[in-house]
Length: 69
Image (cartoon, rainbow, N blue to C red; front, side, top):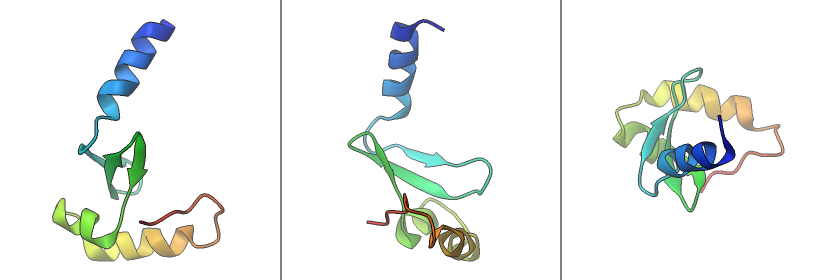
């Protein structure tokens, strides 16, 4: 894939306000400023199971990149 096509695709994916469901964990994220944000509210408002989110959140506690707004 060309760099231009790749950038175009990423811009489409990272559109502010878009909800993305991560395929492996099933956690829902909100795109804001080209970043993926999540919280129990974002996840459940998108139709996610709160227990799935709690399990995912617990698994992220020891990882340096965890950021929950």
